[in-house]
Image (cartoon, rainbow, N blue to C red; front, side, top):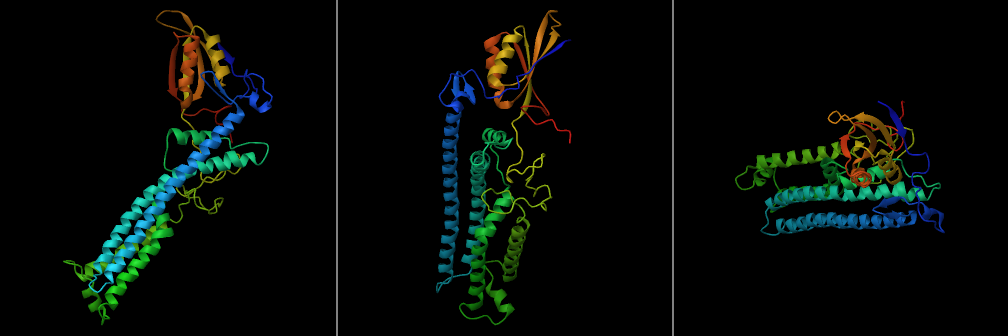
Length: 364
């Protein structure tokens, strides 16, 4: 078996046989598809419009968050008005605590969606627009991969526990405090002041539930919410929060923000390295030069040619190896078909691809 290497040249990966332009930057297409060439200025315009779209979507979910909080505030006001009316009953306050807890769960779910769009916005702000302000323009090495992965496979950047804990500490703690104070005041002061603990427990009963059971349930609820708020305070993956990020004391795996890259450089605290799925394509063809040229020119991916023999026919064929990502498979198949419709293509997952164009080969 002989091996010939037809790796792509070490030139600028964005250069192509594009028509000349008065603007040097426009002469370098950064994206091609079915004959269309997206120039650098057009790429920037597309990114600006995409940024505006993500901001609008985040604003919509921010409004929905405010709406949920408003529901909790309005229901609290209504419950207090009813409870402290002449014929009011303290059980209304307990019912409202249950309703506010439901609103908290709804708001936490909405907060996770808001953080999904917010994380994309922060990614563009830190690695695209901020990089423009500090020449030479050099965004993070994996920001495009992170954004593409998020677009292809959307995932919540924060857990449901962090979402509940953050909304609890920022908004609902105060609502619960008002309700609990009102509940205690209603029992102690109305219609007359209590004479002791036994009187308080007797007044605390609700329907068939004894006063001891009601008081115990309230105490358990307070303890659970307090501990939940404290235990989730260390979760700092929410992109919308202005908090210190480059602290070295966040060494616990699920609390770590991974703020420093392998090369020692800082990167945005909220972005864990996420890359598109890496694959290995094998193309068995009798027209290796044409297929290789298409891949090298259009995809800017390296190609390695091996010689193989078909055991059924006994004929010799070229086997082309090409490492690529999951978003490039359709483009690869199109280019192979154009050069050799009879080619045989095998695409397999790759555990790890190291080298130029992928993760740097670093033995440290």
